[in-house]
Length: 89
Image (cartoon, rainbow, N blue to C red; front, side, top):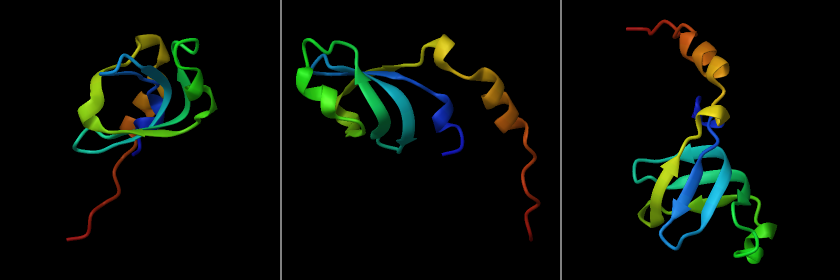
């Protein structure tokens, strides 16, 4: 979960609902947990305005987009450069 908070994807579901905000976690089945969500079309989905966090089942995801300007590249590179802890054998 080290890198998840650096990504702010737009997730489009099979029912044409598009949700964006901070990625919290993803598992091997592409179940996605987002925090502080916002809907890209609030007029079409007004009932989603009160939702702040959501868990999206992987089977309902059409696609997930990572806008290049929303990825914090410097933070991601710094986190990737940290040396791993020595492992005991």
